[in-house]
Length: 142
Image (cartoon, rainbow, N blue to C red; front, top):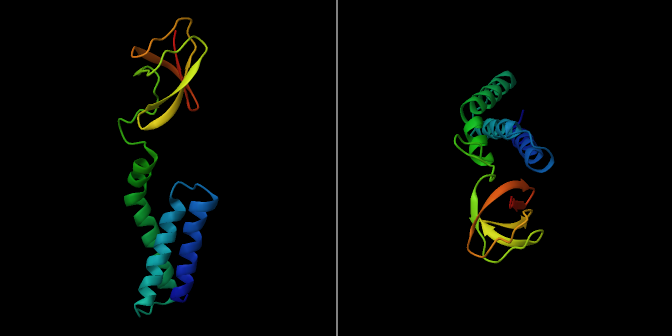
């Protein structure tokens, strides 16, 4: 294959990964392997078609085995010790929150809606425990 065909294949695979589907970075590494194979051809190294495909397969498999898991965990937040659940944590409110009412707060770098499902008033400045998380709503109270 010509070098430009490898670039087209690599670009299509990477664009498919980013735009259309979430293939957990498999297509990204296959696309990068195609780009590297094309770059070898662009430098003037002339390889037979079977050698190009062998290089492509080697690069794709090797890069996935070595790098994919670490990159996926780093970007997706699944690193060891990461706890995505906020249930059981305590937060401090900037305003009084009556039973059944809700308010907005900034917590852990994000804006959240906090809803009091308890039967008592939560006073401004007091620590309250998160009992559950419903989407972008932190549920507090007993």
